[in-house]
Image (cartoon, rainbow, N blue to C red; front, side):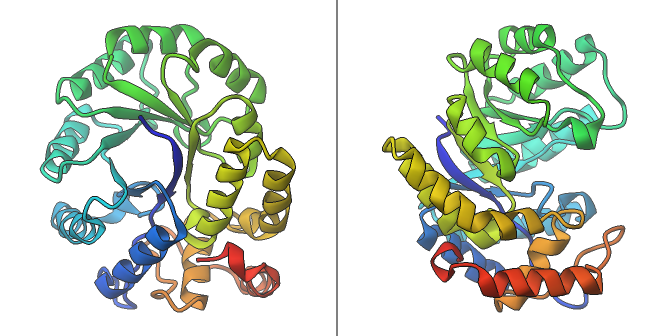
Length: 294
C-alpha cells in the first residue's frame, strides 16, 4: 500500500510567522516534479505541534488542492492525548488522505494495554494507519510482543515508519513483520540498510532538499542496481547528514531558504540555526551535485 519515497513536508513560514502559501506551492510542485510517491502533511517536520487547528485546516485545504491526487497524501494526526489524536484524525479525514501517520504517544509512555486502545480507537475511524515508531523522541520502544498485539488488535495499521537506531531490533521486526505490513524507513541515513531488510520505502525530512536523490536511490535498488544506489547515496550523504546538525526541521528550512523557497523561520521552542552550522550547510549545498537537489 505504501511504497517508494514520501517527503515529510516542511511548512514554510513568513518572517512574521504565518504560513507562506506561495512557498508551499513551490515546494509541493518541486517535490512532485522530482518523482516522489507521496507527501506527508502535518508531521514533525511540518512543525504541526506549534500550529493551531485553524492553521492546520488552512494548510490542508491548500496543500491537498494543490497536490490534486497526483501523489499520495498522508496526514500526521498523532499526539500524546488519545482524545486530541482522534480529533485530529477526524479533521484530517475530511481531506480524504491515503493514510494517517500516528506516532506512539510521547511523554506519557503508555503501557501495552493503553497503547493498543489508543490505536484501536484510531482504527475505528477507518483510515489506513502508519504507526510512527521513533523511540528517540517519544521515550517508548515497542517490544515484539506489543507489536504483535497491535497488529492483531488493529488491522487498520498498514505500515510502520521505523525510526529506531537499534538495528538488531529493527532486523527482528523486519524478519517477523515484513510480510504483514509495509515498513518505511524513518532514518534517512539508514535508508540503504533498511532497503536491504525489505523495507518498502521511506518517509524523509531531508527529501525536502534531496528528493531527486532519494528517488534515484529507491529506483536503482528496485532494479537490483545496489552499487548505483550506493553511488547516489554516497554523493547525497554529506548534505543529508547535515540536515540534522540541529533539531529537524531547522536545517532543512535554512537550506530551503538558501534555495529560494521561503524563509528559514521556525516557531519556538525551535530557534535559528547557529552561524557555524549555517556556514557548513552553505558549503555542502554548493558542493552537492545539483541533479540530486529539488
